[in-house]
Image (tube, rainbow, N blue to C red; front, side, top):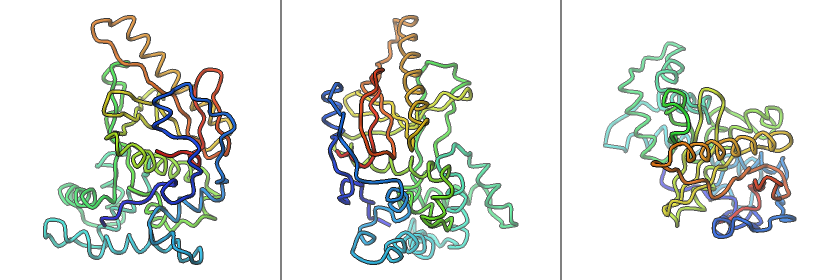
Length: 305
């Protein structure tokens, strides 16, 4: 698999009313009144369909949803055995991918996922598991998010494991056999896949600035879903929430991290940390605005590079 999935802006679904580049240049940009045309039902369908160019061709919804399934089949039956010229078992590859899908957006360890893979009696060693996942990374199928570990908590508090993910959330939906209707009934699962769609799009929008994406999560519940770094040192703390009360919770998280950085800088003046340039909650809603505390609430469906 060598085709990069398209962002919502590239697939002409985001209105593009908010430029991420412009927002970094002008953090006080007035966002009020800028809107997305993607309702929740449309977002759910977009997650299941994915950003595959062939899925965007005119056709039935069923045909559009088939692209991700075809991609999974091609990876397991053909592509994975092309990496390093080494024959690999397509059924085992699919089992490993399904475990990844079940753990999407989590911080599951390799050991936990291997136990999941072998729970039904399938034989797979850790060396084999790591060989397969390494090949799947080289194919740009699985795409983990590294941990960001600023010294604002003790070293034992901050989790250093990667957040598990895919290059496109539609792969997880296809592997788990989830339709748009299933996700409408399982909003928690949709929320995890929405996070992956946000990561996919942000990587596309910051490719020109050599953007790097990480995440922060500690054992006390402090988290930032996405820490988006530009190559010039600027960065944003981003929470991804579908809407409702989640926006308030997400804003509270990024503000708390910023305040911990400020506290660190007053106590450790010899090793100062840069404060975040932007605090953002990306949502599945339709209206953008700036909260009184300065946090930008931005629908994913109106963002662009």
